[in-house]
Length: 342
Image (cartoon, rainbow, N blue to C red; front, side, top):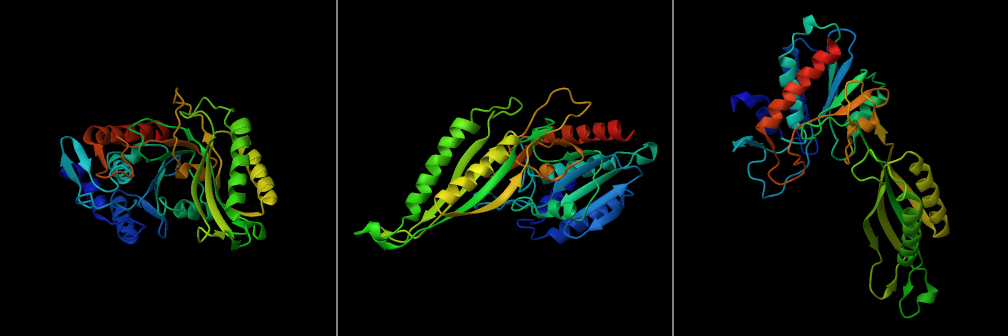
């Protein structure tokens, strides 16, 4: 296990909802300082750099999702049958450990271009860490690598996202005389029927070949309305998300949702609006994309690559990666560093 000491150390930190953010950030900072990196920025985020003309950046989030009881010893890295088990081993402490392992093998004095390493918080809930960097007007390098799990495939794009919370206000009345009330539940159903009709006729049919799921998807995640079986409901709340395959869908969807909200007396709250992207990288021949969201969407002006460990067991019980994938990822990171920073 000494060979995987960095990952073992990272897994020990309980970073669910950033609980031990300070501790993991200090561990990473001290490790990189010993390699000659300097601290550029430090809050709950950490930015480290080495060399001049920093052309390449790596980004990893330090937080993890919560675990369920079936996950035995989540904060202890376990090696079994060629697999490394531990909370965050895949998403994405494995990626971070590979970054740290890779840079420890590089002689930066022989390279013309330097690099930056970014470590963020709050990725699993609200992207707070990367938003902080953007708000702080961080200038990112020309090339950025995000260590999310990809089973060692380089992905150069992913879909966008629109997340809505929509609130319907009705008028409460006894169900024996529903005409005296206004049903918030029925208005939400009518709203959704019209939105679904619009989606199937105008959005879903417009496909993008770059994605595994070729079209923009729509999902009604939650519905909460009413207080009793014998009352006309005065309130209903629904949540919807669209995974956007084409930028032009954003304007179409937002316009239609606003139109229907006005018709059915609803209030709209946009939780997230993120554009899709596909970047062209000169040394990558085949374009592959991710179906999931990453912090790459929040960063503009850089050529973005998503590259991490496998198998992809993010958010699963007994999260794990293979030893083979981890060691290959370290080599992939080293190769990219030499290619871009030479």
